[in-house]
Length: 242
Length: 230
Image (tube, rainbow over all chains, first blue to last red; front, side, top):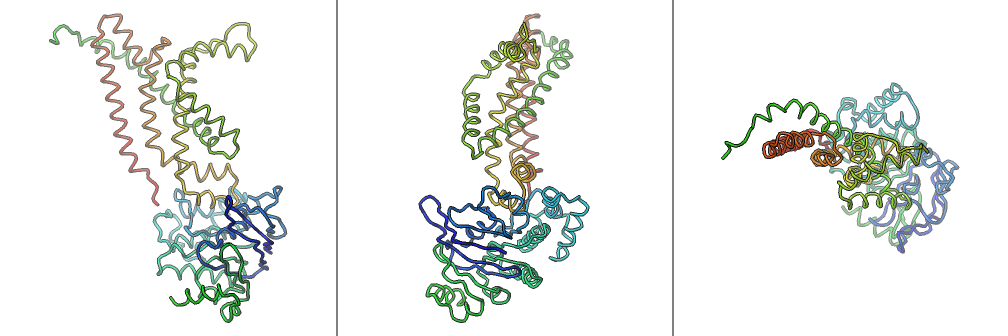
């Protein structure tokens, strides 16, 4: 469903992505990990065109992201994205956060949109918070609302950009639980995360990046069992020690 | 020392001063503020656009307006607009636009340059992630601006916009150079007619002072009430 092929990207003269290629099939969950500054977030933001790239191609459901003729807003409306810092709209109520894009982008009437929003709030366990503003919720609750907001668009795939990195430790699990349930429902997901427990539990494949390169791209069991590259071994030994 | 003054002139002329003069001043202030904020916001969006032609045009406009004395702009517009109107419509004689309309257009265009800089700062104060989140949900530029960025930028900047409006309120007194009867113009007319310069100008100053001070206290109070919870 998502094909990333020989993608390279530069910030000025610094190359941040080097010839990255991978593929995500429908219903697959792929975890992207690696040390900070390795280009994981940049790569995932290339998938929905939030970051432009200079070389290579990315196609989502057969549509080329980098093509100038592609209607990017239309494509993005079909790909859900969850950010590290939630990025809920602070001036709108939780309910309005969920319904705004449904109405403005998909053209749903507000009753349908509200109903959909309510259903998804229930799914992430926040029904009673519909009329609150994002600033009145905890980090974990905000991130669950953000996931619901993305799901409200009925996406064909979901991108998660370090969804738990900005959370206090005791709130990480409530967000991961929602993501695990989503994966079990068969959602196609690319997840940038350091949560190796999550990767072990639900990922079909793990992609390990370092210095802008995809160093390792292996089925989960293989990646944790016998990583081939030295860099991945080092990374794993450091992160699993904690 | 105060025996030679006739303070009663204020009481006698107050209805004229406020009903004609202050009404004009407040109407001009309110309309120029509204127009200035709308046009200024458009200018700010242009300044922040990635197309060089747009941003260069907007910043040239802002720089010209900000480096020209307001009195000069008022004069120029008052005398030029009829001829520009004639040129555009191809009429045989200069188009009469009237002092009020001329003043309104002038203040709107002039203040837009200042409101532009305020709104630009406001837009830039919104984290980049907000625009990214809006884009990721499939919103195009106008929807993202209209629903996400501008409402937040505007609310953040309301205190500064209102403070600029207080300055605009004081600046409107300059329209007396094109013989318009705003509050200051009305006070000035009475002062000349009755030979009560000290009384009238002191009174006018006091009125501007009280209104501006009260408004700025109100702005400070408002600031706390409208802040977005983050």
